Length: 139
Ligand code: ZN
Image 1 (spheres, rainbow, N blue to C red):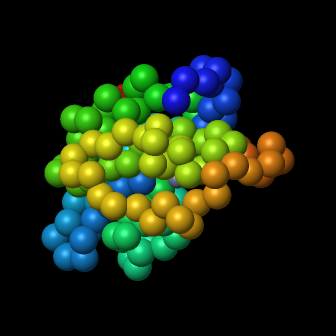
Image 2 (tube, rainbow, N blue to C red; image 1 turned 45 degrees about the horizontal axis):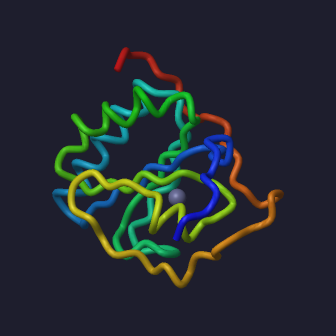
Image 3 (cartoon, rainbow, N blue to C red; image 1 turned 60 degrees about the horizontal axis):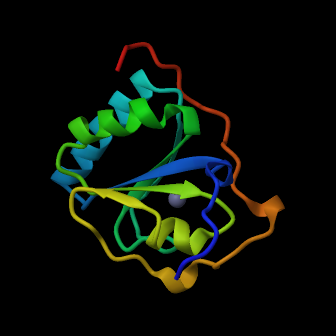
């Protein structure tokens, strides 16, 4: 379907969801999380050891600013330690953000798309949470 192109200004922030299985993969997820916290001004979300929302595996979320994309995403390409990572924009269209306009590093996992609204009000667009990390190292 050809429609109007979506302007880049529709993207208010990004999420990276880092998935893991219990056990050894969780240890890798902990390592990746530590490395991110040392290097990037990003919002590190809670651990979800049980699937939550549209996500079918344990994961945690990293929220990051548009400006950080060209440094953080390539760093994740090199340092995801075999884990699956979903990177999606935050716009007014959560369903498309996750299922149509996202990118994956590693194995692609299913998502419960029916849990995501197709469109939300402008006031509900996710703004970037305040970064809660204090990077001390260069990426
Ligand atoms: Zn997300």
